[in-house]
Length: 506
Image 1 (cartoon, rainbow, N blue to C red):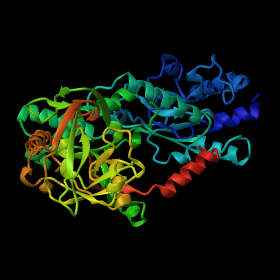
Image 2 (image 1 turned 30 degrees about the vertical axis):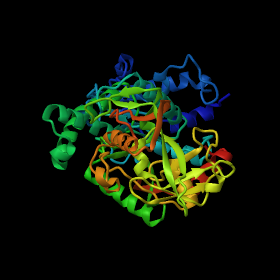
Image 3 (image 1 turned 180 degrees about the vertical axis):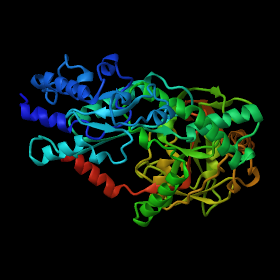
């Protein structure tokens, strides 16, 4: 059971540093009877005394305890002598009320929102004294920070946003009532990739131009116009929901000041060795010419021959077909010898740099250490043994394309195979494609199939199951490609995170 001393410390420390807005529109009860400052303070004290006996909310929330009792009252500045109005600033922030610019705290003190130094407020001073005297059971200045996950400013918000904000705000208010120093930072997707996709589709539809044709300055102008239209709408909805965010820190993350801060942080992380430049497999979207997170990639299960629409192609592309083909093995004598393989991506034959078999597979063990001749580039493809190869899968021999597969990349590292990337950023064939340079990737598929048939290298084709990676923003088929990107070294960071979890810190 909380003592009177506990309750005094609770109310004296509670709401020591206000966030704006701390609540939605005040109830009519909150506006009434505040004719002067003394009446306001007496009302607060009466409410404080009324909950002293039931102040067990830290251990057991009381269902009968109203929210208006536990949070500071927002009162009209016209009712408090000596407090200047800040109505114009609040109106500019699109709050529903334009008169709420001062706060009465649990100890009866009043603080104007326009106070440039909230640390000098009577409430905070009294709370600090209470903390030093030992009347508080928790550290007064212990921080609690909540960053709102950016909501895409691609249009109107939905119930999912309302649910997330409600849960976050409940946690924030709970910790605020416990005397923590709160930072509840509002956030929105300020012209990020999601917005770029929407705006670029709009430009293509209205003007028939993509971002490369329209140019960076004009594209930035259109992005800013979209941001100005929907970002303010998003913030307004969050305010109307009553989210107690610190709106004084709301900012455009692509603004000049934060661009400079991000650049400085980036340089420092690089100098500290935390981030580095390197080539690794990424999910690449040819339509948007950008890498994409795994969270933005959906999987589409194909069961047998299926034709689907792929952005950038006039006709549907067929998937769910397994193509069997063979490579000629290079030998000292003239005895013809072949090795049979299968793939659902004939266009990636141009990226082959080796062939892998299981070291214990008796059918191929005698071939390990030999090479096959690539039918198009003419380069030798070493035949290597690797225990990751499944000897029961299809032909049991796989072509290794380190530039277009995570598993193949690992095999290539172990066997020191060359990494060949055959696609440009827009999905067309690069210099590695020889005669087919500039062709679209799925157009090249049909070209390769016809060429293999003409050279008697295509053995057969049959329906199969296939899993496609689909970009959930553009609908494009995502390619795995080795790209030079910025990466973070996670060895030390991962160990610290794991230790924190093991020690119960988080």
